[in-house]
Image (cartoon, rainbow, N blue to C red; front, side, top):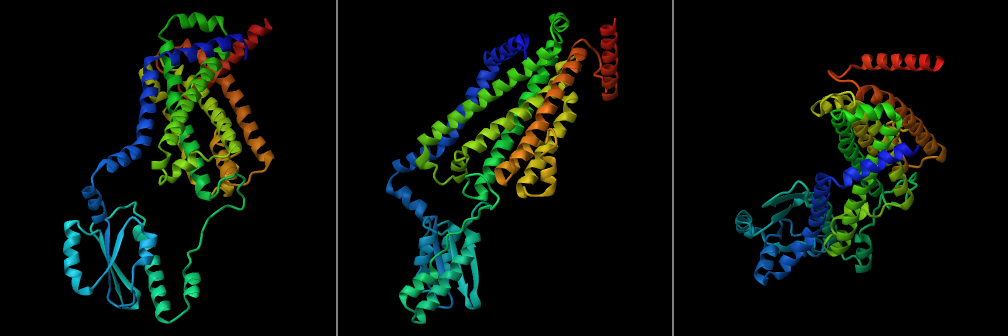
Length: 428
């Protein structure tokens, strides 16, 4: 890249960084990130300022009553150990109607009834789709019944303790090359990077197309395009936009890291936030590399398509097909996360435009041979250089063209005529 491209790059970066709309949007999003991370601390502070009466209300709404119709369970200590956020008590079957009334009034969270032959019924005053309580409770009830039966059978306390000791269960991948503790960690980290790449390409890709379309209204562009290499213009514009996108992402992540550290004590229960900050260094560096490769490739295409329209209002129509293709690539990466070892994932990870997302999914979640990584990166680099070259050709022709946007066949015909004219000029 020569001096002309660097000049365009500096101009694009300066233009974005001094634009009031960009500054305003960045600040608003940074404040929003800080506020969202601070909400748990604010709630914790407010609850700490409340009196004892308010605390008793919170406890009251989490009360659980256990009604054992078989007389097997003698205490609720196991339930208290597992569900520390709830208050458990063993009730008699005669109190059942009164307990149901308390539940309807909101004074009782739920009633757990145990019948003969291990039949269990749970009645809740309120339910939540995201509550794991109803999913784990059957296993805990089964353990409580087994514990009570063992105690009544006269088994030694040491044997009972060893028998009922819960296991420590963890899922990991034999093929994982990352330092992530579990497959879930790798999935969360991969999803964050992939979704971020998707959002930034869709956002800044449209910015590139809109910027090129608006410049066509400036007659000075006709002079500039005939006196400067089109490749320098499109490369400088795309690289400048890429740098601005990276600056904005760095600001967002910096804000996230700072306020996460400030509010870490109140955010301990939100596991995926910790996972996002535990990404291994090698995986993080590859994420940045794939982000840049994917962003540059699509930015060149967005810039070329933006040069084909005469009005900025027509940009969304022209780039619609390209946006749809990118949505397909994003959806393929989401499905790939479900089973990253599938053969189709491996094949697509070597294809240009697919490789930034699909290859990153494989690298982050499975074991990938070094030559596969180099092959995927190499194919993307070659494609990116080709797209930069073809985009510069379309850019030069499109900036000087007004009226209705040409169709794909017309673009190919224009490129062929331009190539023939260039050869004729060189021959003469």
